[in-house]
Amino acid sequence: GWIPSVYTIYEVNFQTSSRSVSEAAGIITIPVVIGGGTADTTISVTATGGTAQEGLDYVILTTSVTGDSDSGATVSVRIVSDDITEEAEDFVISIDGCADNTRRDPCVAGSIDTVTITIESNAGAGAGQDPHFV
Image 1 (cartoon, one colour):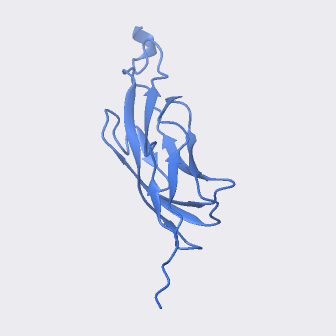
Image 2: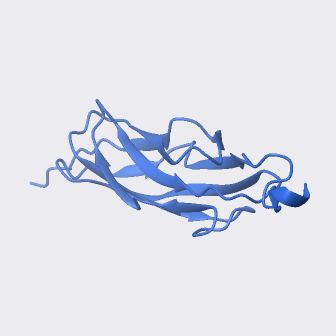
């Protein structure tokens, strides 16, 4: 006879839904929490929207990360510093998908499937101006 398959559906989430960083932060890591007791999960992410521009204000260094439910995974982003005095800028990183590479159990993006990163300007008064005329 037919034997039904038993699957455990588990979630992957960012650790938090928002984070503020200094423009001088350099490379930041964004933790991803992996549920379900899995040993090997691959998560794909993208960056979209917001007032920050990819390439000018930030660069996503990892669009696919692998981790497990014990240690999770991290997405790396380089924050690009400049000498321009500007308002805080933001962008959103989203979990696009995930795959269990060991048990083939289905995984889904959980309730914290996006994280908004706010980049606080580190340029002081007069930044970007000729210091001889300030």
